[in-house]
Structures are given as C-alpha cells and as structure tokens.
Image 1 (cartoon, rainbow, N blue to C red):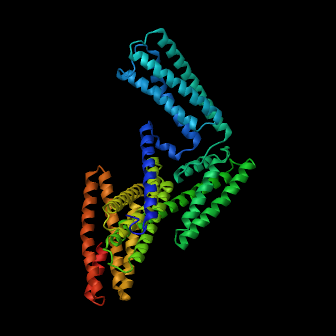
Image 2: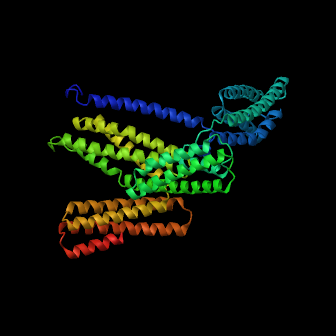
Image 3: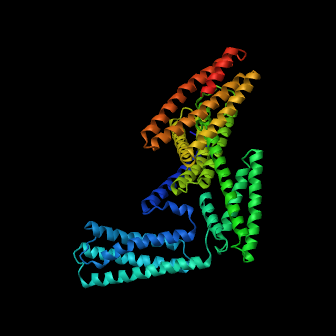
Length: 511
C-alpha cells in the first residue's frame, strides 16, 4: 500500500512499528516485576539509604522467630497447616528482604548477603520437600534444619555489620522527593553539631535548586520572593556551618539560625506546592481538546481543505505542546508533592513517560490515516493509539488530583475563572465576540475540573453528610455552567445589548 502511493508514510509506519515493539517489551518487563514483588514499603520513597536498611532489618527481625519455629519443628510440613505455612513464608520473605538490604550495602557485604540468601533458599527448599514427603524426622532433615538455623544467625549478623559499615562510610543519598529531603534537612537542623556526613546540607541544596527552577514559573513578585528566600537560606547555612566548625553548634545563635532555616524551608515548600497546584489547574484544564482538533483534521474527507497539511501540522504542534506540559507537570508533581506516596509518584512518572512516547506515534498514525483514508488497518491503529492517549492522560490527571490538596485546587481554579471572567469583560469592551466565547469556554473547562475533583472527593469519603453536600454543590455547578455558556453565546451575537451584558455578568457570578 505504501509503495502504491509513492512511499508516503513509510517513515511514520516504521516509527510506529518500533514504538509498538518497544512498548510490548516494556509491558512484559513490568508484568514480571509486579509478579516478583513480594513486599511494598511506601516509606522507602522518602527515606535515605540507611533508614531504609534499618527498617528492612526490623522487618526481618519481626519474622525471624516464625521462621525458626518452622525450621526447628520436624513435624511441620511443607505448605501444610496454617502455622507451618506461615513459618515457611516467613523464611522466604526474610530472604527477599535480605536481598533488598544487599542492594544498598557495600560490595563485599552485598556479595556475602546474597550468597547466604542463596544457600538458605536452597536448603529451605530441600527441607520443605523432605517434610512434604513425610521425611521431616529423618537425620538428613535434622542436619538440614540445624544448618539453616545456623545460616540464619550468620545472615542476621552479616546484615547488622553491613548496616554499620554503610553508616561509618557515610554513603547516604538524599531522598528523591521534596518531603523526603525536608525530613533529612530537619534531622540535621535539630542537631547541627552531629556529623551526618553532609546529608542534611546536601538535601537543603537540592531543595534550593528545585525551588529556583520552580521560581521561573511564578509571577515576578512571587519569583523574587522565592529567590530571596533561597539566598537568605544559603547565607544562614554558611553562618551555621561556621558556628558548628568553631564548636558553637549548641549556642543560642546556632539554634536560632537552625530554626530560621527550617522556617524558610517550609515557606519554600509552600511556594513549590502552590506552583504545582497552579500547573495542575492549567495543564489539565481540558486535555482532550487538542486531540479532538487533531482527530477532526485526520478524519476530514480528502480535498475538504486545500491547507490540510498545514492544518495537520498546526494541530500536531498544539497536541505536542499540550503533551509536553502534561508530562512536565506530572513529573514535577511526582517529585514535588508532599504526600510521600511512592506508588503515586511512580504512577505519575510512568504516565508522564508514556504520554511523551505516545504523542509522536499518535501523530504519525494520524498522518498515515490521513494519507490512506480507505485503509481499515490505518484507521484502527490510529483509533487504538487515540484511546491509549486518552486513558494515559486521564490516569495522569487523576493521579495529579490525588497528589495535590483539593482545597488549594478549588481555590486556584476559582482564581483562574475570575481572571477569565475579567478577560470576558475586556472582550465585550473590544467587541471581540470570538474571544468572549473562548474565555467563557475556559471558565466552563475550569468548572468541569472542579466538578471532577469534587466527584473524586465524594467517592473517597465515607461521611454521608459530606458526600451529600459535595454532590448537591456539584449538581448546581453543572446546571449553572450550561446557563452561563448560553448567556455568553447570546451576548456574543450582540455585544452592545445592555440586557445581555447584565445577564452574562449575573450568570458568570453564579458559577
């Protein structure tokens, strides 16, 4: 087919094929990862290396007695009674947790832990087989049980040594999220005289770096305020560090500086969260609109527009811009929100990555479909990618809504709606009918997002009174939106009609 039309669309088809092959491989890998997952610790996402190792060690210690009871009881069967099953599962889970500690240990300790885990796993499997076959009381099984018990003791000792060596080496990493870095910073500021190998200061520097990037998205007055906070924080840290070096970490001056730094960091965090909410409000206002425009262009009959290629490029660029904003905002929310929820953050990063990789393939599929409008396979491929794009964007939107504070979201949405209403007034004064309708549509889009968030809050709540109040308010909002849009369209037909202007203002205010 491509050869019949002079090879048009060959490059796009090749890119689509490579994309689909890559996505299949990624999906298989993700399925394998999830199937292998045995434990899930959301705190890991917000904790430093040493903290995670200690929490994992505590989890091992909480399970080790069940494991030993199973190992030492020759009457226990492999996968038999509930107590036997619990002991056997505890043994296997201990080995999984031990390997997690190995992943964070120094090379020599990591190798030793993995070897011990492998030996214990092999012996445990053999013991389980003997007991399942009724040979749990034999000399072979008894020797095997003693060896497993001994190796478990060795594993426990090795894990403690590995953690101590990591602590002494000073090899700790700042947490990936803002909330995790803030916690590391606060721990240092509470005891600035204690040597944490620079972890607290490193975390603060990374927070300031992120704050400066966020500041670029703020209005001038807020941007200058955040920049000033960053500079003042850096000055205070230098002074605090000098006091600590001189042996005055416990002085009142040092303590005051530490409290001052902590206060400024909280203000910086609030500024970051505020920007995140604004980006979620703006970039997810109507994620389906650019796609709808591209789809309309693709599905227009051949010859319907002489400028079809130009229009396609224009709509493609707008879709790409929208996708870039969605992906960027999802990543910012993943790393900048203060929920400390690893699952949420990973979901946002995955959705952002998929939006970014899916967009060019959707555009390629659209071009192929436009060039070969009679090709059923091309139409089906475009439709499949279109649905994937919608689902991925919806998932990113829902996760962002979960990550930000709902009250802040509604407040920022209201501010944006009021700004659009003021622009509507400007359009009326300038006799700009199209601008009036577009700004009114923006108000409706923002209000619909508030409706979505309200509906999500109602679904997550278990308080009947709260749910009822939210649902009633959401229904009122929906009905008033329709009236407001009708009023805006009526005014657009006659921008000098005073009665229509008054009605528009009334309906806009009602929304």
